[in-house]
Length: 220
Image (cartoon, rainbow, N blue to C red):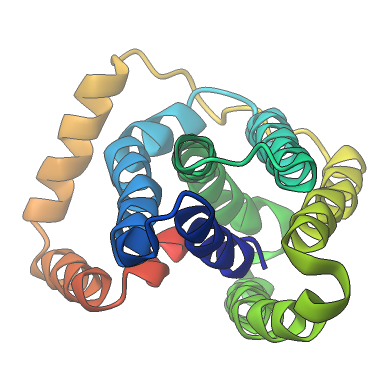
């Protein structure tokens, strides 16, 4: 819903500023702002998830995204939204998600017994992809009655459910002591991937998908 709303918002900003011909550029810049932080921080975020309580890390990232969404909604409602506000908010959201995703994905094996792990992974993937389909559809239906500020406000309020779920989940402290630095862990992970042809091709295919469909970046 937020991506849908921000796409409309940057077009409205271009029209408001008297430069409607720049709307495609604004949309491209927004996509870039969403892509770069996510790709830049993902490797570091994975190493960070091995060092801290993953539940606490998720609480921090989700609160950051909730606050970011609330600020966007308020700026849109008051008419203060500008291209720079949208770009900064998109970058913050992407950076927070980069730290959120590895922690969330790696929590699943510690929440369910091993025999049920394939089903749990399937349910998690189904939930995410269903939201990717239902979210834009709901945004399209709600746009006329509540507008862009309303869509952004609904997105901000949706984090209440996520934070509530995290509050009742058990702690997820690190399973062992990590003596390496974060950069050393990232380098070790890169060497591990390079030694496995299957993982190399998975990354190649994922990179190809990202090049052809930038919206997938948030899922990886």
